[in-house]
Image (cartoon, rainbow, N blue to C red; front, side):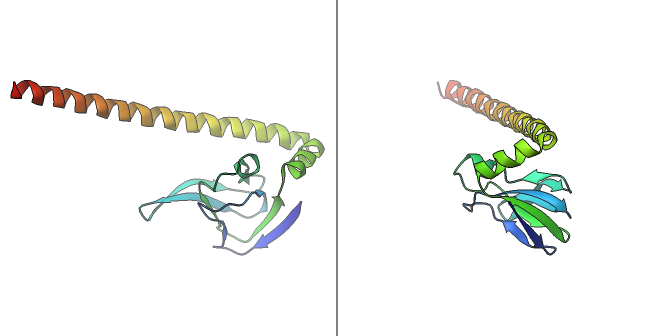
Length: 139
């Protein structure tokens, strides 16, 4: 595991990049955001003790968000599953915290997915109802 010192307003990684590192904030603050139609949506404001980028260690997918420093930051960098495993074995309290936080993040993602699906289904039902009315009027 290595350490990085990064000044404020610097990108750590960018949405869409392929990069497999996970980061733990030792000092400073980091924001996580994604961009849609040139509009940034903040997902999280991270503080010392928080971690981010962990999904990159478990998948080969591109980054789903951008991470940028808000203040001067000192970050611990974990670049492989083996490094993470070694770190978690030596730091069982952090391991328990990590599992809990990842479970919370998954639950929030599931809630967003369900909400999105409910809205999509409602729109399809509304469209089908309107289409049915139009077809009935044509008969």
